[in-house]
Amino acid sequence: MPYQDLGAFIWPIMVLIWVLAASYSRAAMHQRWQARAHPAPARPPGRPVDAPDAAESLRALWETARERYARIAGEYGDYESDPKQVLRRPALADPAVPSTSRFIDAFHEAMALHTDTYPPTDLARKYVAATENAEKAWRAACEAADRLRASRFTTDERALINQGIKLLELAEGATTPPEQEAAFAAARQVLAKLERSAGTRLDWRVPRPARQTIDRLGRPPLPPA
Image (cartoon, rainbow, N blue to C red; front, top):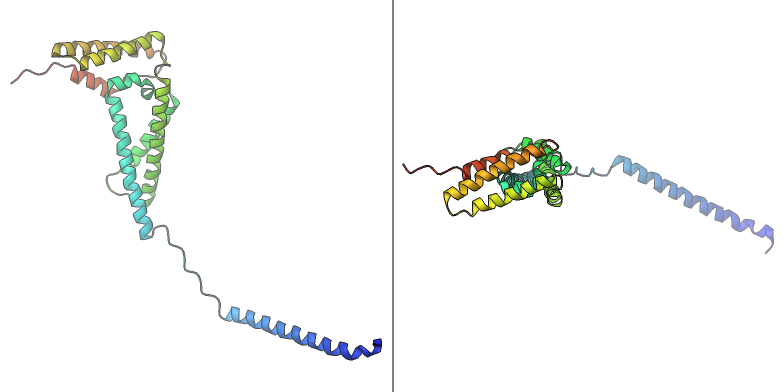
């Protein structure tokens, strides 16, 4: 086909392209106008932190934290009140041991936040976190004490520790009050000697509750009225 005959076809094609482009442009402008005139509805806001469900969940965590705190306090109290445990795990009574120091700090923080009634939200969250830290620190301190045992004490001091444990066991198994009193009195003397020796190097003391246990059990019973 001669090139001059193509002009008859090119012009209609160009017109068709122009019409399609104009139609697309008008459709796009219409969509933009519709979007401005009728904006999409705003999405509802997310549930606030202090919504009822969140508050109930936090209260449940707080109640669990109270149980956790009571369990730690009970285990720690049992340790400090049992002279045999103190001698078998002396590192738990030594604040110079890093794991014991971390537990003491964590436990005191939880103790400061402990309340009998449900506190404000921010304090409840802090209490939950504090009891979790205290529990982890207590487990770590116990594990470290089991590993260390009496390794921080000298050979003579370790002998005193073993002697004290045997005397306490003897007192528990005594068949008569005089035997029990004598065993507790001897254990009291051994612990005092151990404190004097270890105190020159370590910040170690027999906890007061353990002393009171020995005094109470080693005291002769009152005569009947």
